[in-house]
Length: 559
Image (cartoon, rainbow, N blue to C red; front, side):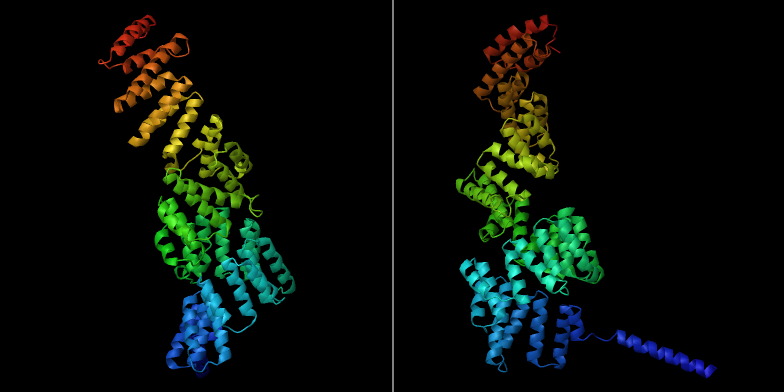
């Protein structure tokens, strides 16, 4: 019994040792590729290169393949260029390498070089697709149509055509192509991710999430799918929920900082945190990086830096036109209403607002509202803002613009309510917000609230400007007590004769209102306190008239 137990124990230990050794075995290249672990595959190839397990030509081919599929197109380009110089590569292979090099250049944003390289390559379907995409990037419509006619019904050609539709913003046409492909080839489940991307672009975020859910149930570690799901969460909810979607990738060992797309999106999800450092390093990979860097500069008040980025962007998408419009509008504001900047901003907003794909969307209507805002046609502004108000009620920027438009057409009651809905402290501290809210209060008979706004200002220039607005608006609306108080402060800050004339007229107005029973008798005590300049003969004359009258009304002006 004992020997048999020993043998059994030894056999069991040997089995465990074998299993343990298998666990430590390095995966093969095929296994890495099957798992789409291209970084791991590239590392293995570099390691095997030391032992010359493969020929240098084969190693470079596989390295180029891995780098390309891992989004490292610059590294893939170097591999293909080295292959091109090898004497063992024949003419046909060289022509095919030109196509591969063209593909790398395309993904690096070097579209003209990609086209020139592809033209030297082997005539094949891949070359046709590449040249069509290069022409699309260059905006050469006739050339796009030329290569479009050369496409076949092959799967790759249909996918490429759908991609062109997607880049042009023709999302429904792309969806139709993808759906037709899925009807024929149901095993192409990854195409569902492309469909989900289209629905996300069409603002059908819930639909996009449902389609992604089906794919992610069997491919939970797909970076592209998880990333799209996170982006949808940002649109539907907020940044923290969006970033939480990346937890599944982190748990599987993914290094988000190694992926340009996830690095970029983490910055977006965190509201621009660490944006200058990360976005500057990313360049134009992904393509949204320069746009978000521009937004970062705008949010931080650096309009000139944002303008440098916009200058190099030739808009093709609605978001790019909107960003260019906003930047030029802010440049106009910074340069005292520069006409050229206003013209460019108005044109860009109008292009988006009138485009068939955007005219009935919320951003499209916001753009038309902005167009008319710049043209100072506020009745038209309200037509568009009224139509989207139910969807934007909690948006500070919307309530700001809606409030200003209401005030501009004289609807001061609603305007004040909208301006007070703005919660962002930075926006509430801006002079424009305080000035318009003060004017609304004055116009609705609440001058004391306008005076409260002045007393809370801690910026001397803004305080001075607001005093002028309160003084003049209150005088015009018959709120003479607050007009007198405002002119009094202005006169003490700047002994301008106009301020004294304004104060004297306002004091007379207070007396008139008291006599008519439209102002409290106690207001006389306050105006007497404002008339304390013994150097002016008019002050003595006014006090000689007001003090006895106030006393007869039972008002102690000396209190």
